[in-house]
Image (tube, rainbow, N blue to C red):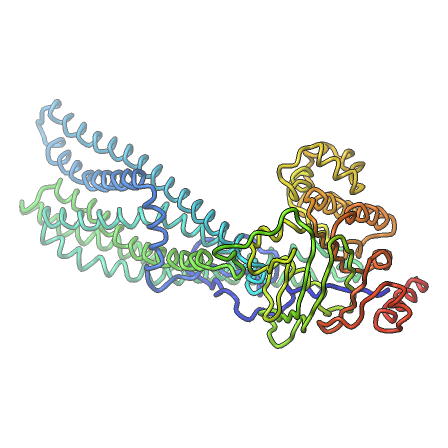
Length: 630
C-alpha cells in the first residue's frame, strides 16, 4: 500500500535555536524528566550582571502600594531584630541587678516583649506582601510570555525546541518567583541588618568591633567556598536522580518489549548502575558537608569564644558591662549571618537575572507573520477561491532545498482538489502556505482575489477549517474540544455537528456526555473517534475552504468508512483541498494534482491520470498490488 506521508516541517534540523538553559548554581531541582539525560533541559544559568532584573522591577512597579508596604514591613522587621540585643542589654544591666525594684525589672521585660510583638507582626506583613508580589509578578510574566508565544508563527517552534520554551515558562519563572518573593527581601534585610548592626557594634564596643571586622571575612570565605562546591555536587546528584527517573519511565513504558526480548536482567543491571552513580555522588556531597560543618563550627564558635574572652577581660576591669557583652555577641552573630547570607543572595540574584534574560527573549520575539498596518478586507460573502501563482518556497531551516518550485494552482469556489505524491513532494507545504504560517520567497497566494500578505492572518484562517491527519485533541472535556472550531456554539449546534460527523452515538455513551474529560490528547477515545471529533470541530467552523490532511490514513476499515461518510458531508458546498492517501477520496475529487519535487507533474481526473501511465498510475498500481497482497 502506498503511503503518501506529509513532509512534516518539524523534522527539519534546527539552525538557530534559542540559547540553551545551561546548568546553574541553584537548588531548584529538575521538574522531572521524561527523556534521557542528553535530552533533559538543564537548569537556568546565572547571568553575569543584574541588568536583566530590570524586567522584574518594571513588573513590581505596577503595584506600588504592595511594594511600599513590603518595604515598610521589611524596615520594621530589620529594626526590630536589631533592637532585640539592645533589649537584652537593658535586661541584663538593669533587670538582673541585685536589690532591683521588681516593678522596674518588669519594665525592661515589657520592653523586650514589645519588640518581639513588633517583630512578629512585621514579619507576617513582610511575608504576605513579599510573597504576594512574587506570585503576582510571576503570574504577569507568564501571561505576557504566553500571549506573545501565541502570536508567533509555527516556524518559530520548528527552529526552537518546545521543551526548552516550556522549561523557561516553569523553571525560569520559578526562579524569578524565588527572587521576588524571597531573595530580594533577604538581600535588603541583610543589608539593613549588616549596616545597622555594625554601627551599633561600634557604639557598644569599638575595640571588640575591630576584632569582629577582621573575623567576619575569615568566617565567610570558607563558607562561600564550600557552599559552591556542595551546590555543584548537589546539581550532579539531581542529574543522577533525573537519569533514574527517565530510565524508569522509559523501561516501564516499554515493558512489553523488555519482556518479549527477555531483557529484564540487563535493564535491572542498567538501573543498578544508575542507582550506584547516585550513591557515589551522594558520598562526595556528604563528605564535603561534613567538612564544611566542622569548619563552620570551628570558625564561628572559636571566634565567639575569643571575643567573649576579650569581653570578659573588659567586664572584669570595668570597661564594659555584662549587658554590653551580651548585646555585642548577639548583634555580632546577626551581622556575621547577614554578611554571610549576602554572598548567597548575590548568586541567587545573578541566577534570577539569567532567568529574566531568557524570558525577556521570548517577550521580545517578534512574529514572523504579522498583519499589515492597514490590512485589506476580504470580500463578503466569501467565495472560497484559492490561488497559487509561481510560488517558490524554502523552509527557513532548509534553505538549500525548495519545498515548492514555481508552483501554480487555481482552485475554484466549491471545487475539490486532491493532492497526491511521494513523501517530501511538498503536499503539506501547500496547506501551511495557504494558512499563512509561512510566506513564500517568490510568487503570490490569494484568497478570494486578495493577496495573503495584504490581509489579516486571523481573517484568512477564519475562512479555513483544518482536519489534520491525527485528530489532535486537547486535555479538556468533549464540549470544549468540539466547540474549539466555534467557541460560541450552542449545545444544539454541537450535537448537530457531532451527528453529521458520525460522532453522536459514542459521545452520548460517554459517562458525562459532553462534560466528559477526554484525557490527555483525547486518550480516552479511539483513533477513529478522535478523527470524527476533529471533523465535527471543522463542521462547527463552517468555513468556505476545507483542508483535509490525510484524515483517514491511520484508521481501520470500519472507522475509515464512518469517517469518510462524515467527510463527504463536510465537503458539501465547500472548496476542498485534500492531501490524499486512500483512492476513495481521490476518485471523488474534481481534480487530482500530482506533486513531485515541489512541482506539479500531472493533473486531471482519476480516469485520465490512470490512463496516462505517469507517476499517479504507478503509485495507484502499487496501492492496488499492496491491497491484493494484504
